[in-house]
Length: 157
Image (tube, rainbow, N blue to C red; front, side, top):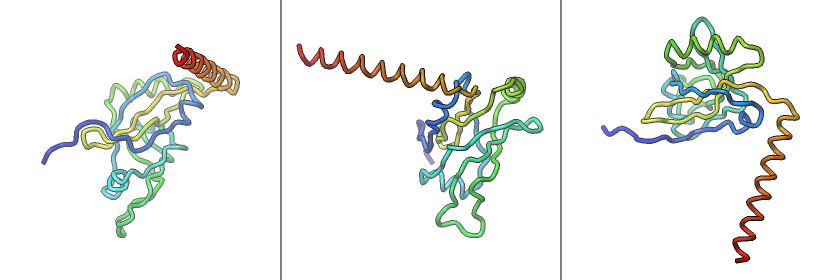
């Protein structure tokens, strides 16, 4: 049986990049049940309110919504159950130290299949304040204005 190649993105948390300063990213595997994998293969998941935390030397993903599989039976899963993440021991110990710092949290950025296995991209992040968000929006709009002016100038030639 041939293995899948590449990366198929299922869900992205665009709001996380708006609300947080991303310091570092980690790729983690997920411990899932069969119906969760089938639901993810159908492209159904929501990372909006998701977060991760370290508990007893293990990393857990909370509040990620993977809807029940439509053709599932009594073996279907709970949509918002806590899911264990698979990381190397050294990465977990590094995360334990960094998440103890005030203002730091673990946020899922994207959920995807990599070579047929479900993965989540976790970010070690710090919350942005409202003035930081305004500065980011102003910089983005200024960059857009520059690009518009350059494209108008190229067309005028």
